[in-house]
Amino acid sequence: MLFYRQLILLALLLMVFNANAQQRGPEKWSASVYPNPSNGVITVQLAGKYDELTHINVVNDQGKSVFWKNIENDRKHEFDLTHLSPGKYMINMMSTNVYMKQPLIIF
Image 1 (cartoon, rainbow, N blue to C red):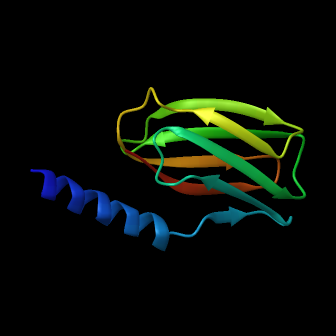
Image 2: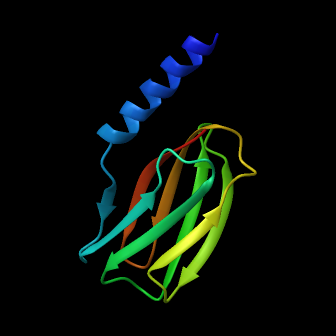
Image 3: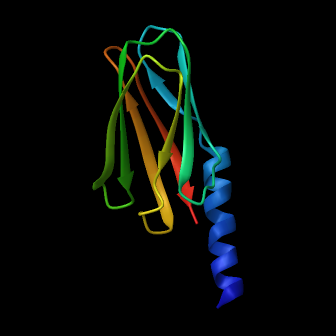
């Protein structure tokens, strides 16, 4: 059973490392989410030109929003997601002209 769980975690890790963050919008903007995989405490770091207000939405593998936060002004934010069950999630980051999504693994 332990080997099977490790194999699944490895497969999920490979999916995270092979997936690129997707960005839509005309402006130069990027975001890093680390550590990934995580124990539930993550940092979101914004870089480049971005609006004052950015919406962070974490969605589980069934498409349900499990965390929502508006962040403003600062470029680095720490979030405690330890209340979430282990698994694969998607972090959606949205501002006026930019939409970016990135996978997240919580173990």
